[in-house]
Figure 1: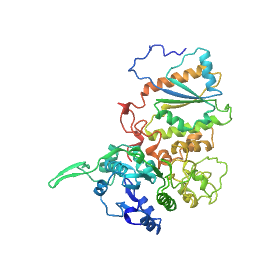
Figure 2: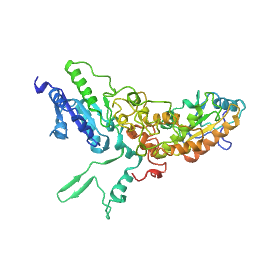
Figure 3: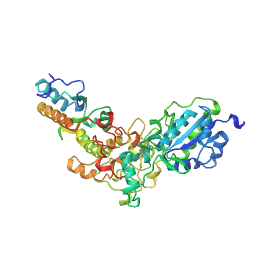
Figure 4: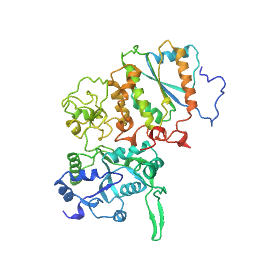
Length: 150
Length: 342
């Protein structure tokens, strides 16, 4: 059921495709993405989902490691504020992402490569939009390692 | 025992301040025990052997080499490779050799930007002809050579194979002696050395574990800098809003800074079971910031002056994100706008 954006066909071997790692919490966002799948709502195939129990479990080391291992962007998606299954986990994620963004400045990494979104279990459409929007953003920014792997 | 049968010890400094060398002497009269136990074959700061003496040795001649300092220049790199070849056991000694430490903070900018600042732009520089150091200079008396200034600063194990790590800026005297004493005993008894890659002369907990201060449930609503307050002598500094790297730093120093009211700067490097001191600190710190509102969080975080220099003061060379994006350049190859001048 995975479909690309309307105008693009299968990419050629040489064409760069972004890699985006999305960490989704088990209770809201993963279920929301699942709903998007059941509802046959397409989203960008460059977004790869990793399920975690809670965004509060998201050590910033994981986000950094994803980028080091070749991701061009990272999405962290959790329950809406006040709706965390574990009460406060998503607030921890919020503060960590804010702090990690500040660190990105020092490393010369665009803050737009790490995005925090809130998607509930009923928001399949919102998940697809968030994934597509991030993929569009990362295509605009280009590959993370352009300057170095050449 | 004759000199001939003594194990051979070498000490070397690469890109360092010299503090590690002084720290070795801080073991005081025990330095005589070191001299009694080892044949010191190379130690530029104290003993008059030359590089050519090391080059003349057979490979693996040196039993233990304590190598301090980061890798900044081509000369540092050359000496690291040379001493690796000549040594049975190579020890990354001190924070710079372990994780880059202070010299590696230069990785937030570029070689070009550093040279521009130092030789042209800094207010104290008068250099109207814009003369820059060159690797080779022709003079009437011959060619003068300087080692190349590398683009990035590396930790020792990023350029050569390293057997052990002794962290600290500098390693504390009692820890240095403990390491040397252990090595002396193991060699004397012919027993096997610790497993390769081990961190010696440090604890296996975090700095907080050694800290004498009382911790309560942390709630930080405002960060303060050490010069702005007189901290309560008994309470955890982080509880008081002073940014202390204790939670993300390896134990072993005895929490000496906190004992005198200064926050931990993180010199013992990444905590055990963590490979990135900075992101670990972010994880710990973000958990205790007392706000759920994005705007308010940003206002509190404005109190963290220089995040990269605070969280990675002693470990930038080995940071997970170092080099991910060239670490210092945007993808167009331009220096990051926030970090041009050192």
